[in-house]
Image (tube, rainbow, N blue to C red; front, side, top):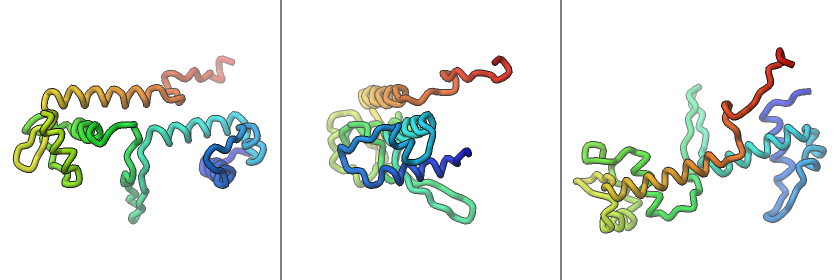
Length: 167
């Protein structure tokens, strides 16, 4: 009997919820305990690991048929707050006066440091990356992309799905 993805995730969650840091589980044992086929269990564990490492935490809010998500925790990229602020401006496209972003009041000391270093320029209440800031942020964006590309999940083009008619 085929199980829904939600049922598989709930089963894995239930099997692991008592675990403590450092506990080890064999995938074969988890598969037996939950009644999920080994290959399915392995695939779901790989997907969960990918999500935990490559997608920021978020909260889903349902509102009269119009669900939305709000990022609740940024993706852990082993970056300093300074680097994270440069990357945030890069992602917003704040490369010139015309595309400057409104400065975040919570980044006060970080922002002042990046202005002092010459990586960020300020015009009125808006900020944007200088040439050196763009280069640093582009390097950080490349590192982020490399992390995502090194994931164990294959893209559709990388998968070799056998056509049943060819068998």
